[in-house]
Image 1 (tube, one colour):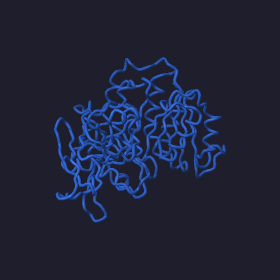
Image 2 (cartoon, one colour):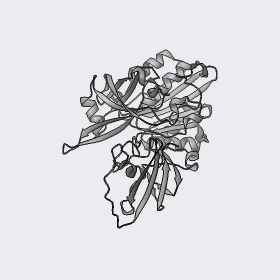
Image 3 (cartoon, one colour):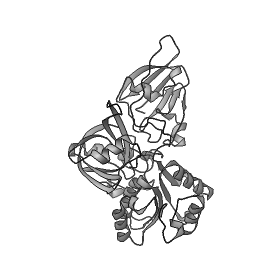
Image 4 (spheres, one colour):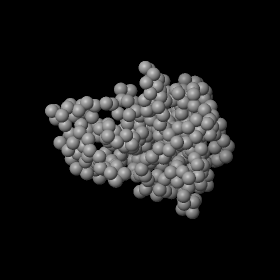
Length: 399
């Protein structure tokens, strides 16, 4: 995907199929069937899914997978790296497609763009995430349940590789229901940076009266000043005031960097758009000092000092670990020291893979871009962002 993470509530409660539920994240080795160049700095990777794993890779458009690979650091030492990428195609049995855009200094994305090829094998996590429509528009497992009659108006605002989940959603809902209208505002630096340019043009040709595409280029002059330059508050207000009628939109999909997503959310809130209508997903939290997507840092125990007692349940088994209070270690980091199979993907508070429920004790959660308020109220936390604040804490990853 974008390298992103989801920020909406449990899809099982939104009419989605089991694919969108909080199933246990698991990695399986998948062979790369094709690597296709999208732009100078982006590729589309197609993984072949064998028939015996078809159920593990069923998904709803808008979800993501995590990729796992051991890569050498600057000193040549191998380290496990995990990165999350949105699935960029509508559900097709037997394959999973993601787009990987090279990030400046990005270890995994640089390796993938330079070295990944057909025939290679990568560990791919079963699809997860809830950046999906609340409306019943998809039915990979239950085609008869697709809503083919209700009129829906969807609008998406995406930037760069944020197009990947949005493209999958747009393709699916437009094909499923002839009463759907879909507007897409897509921001990039220049035309050469536009990912899936041909696919978007094809959608426009296939659904000329139902799909509207608005390319906004920050470093190229377009005929309309509204579509030239960066999307700022003034430009966004004009777009959502003249080009798009916010009062007619049933659901919004926002995917991109934090600043853009938050700008759109604030603008919509100011116009009175209900938060329940807005689905959003972030690339990252924008904090480069956090080692997102990597195995946690080492921690030395001090038996004579103050330690937190952490207990966790995973796959029906209980785990125990001590965490030095002075280390200010997250629950995820501590659990990984005794159970390397503890689920996580981004480790930056944006994907929700490490979600667990507090059984006893208290924690402080620093960031949360993945859990809905009702989930937090029920006691769920992101373990990658949670630090113990009581002598003992118990969490349940199976809940």
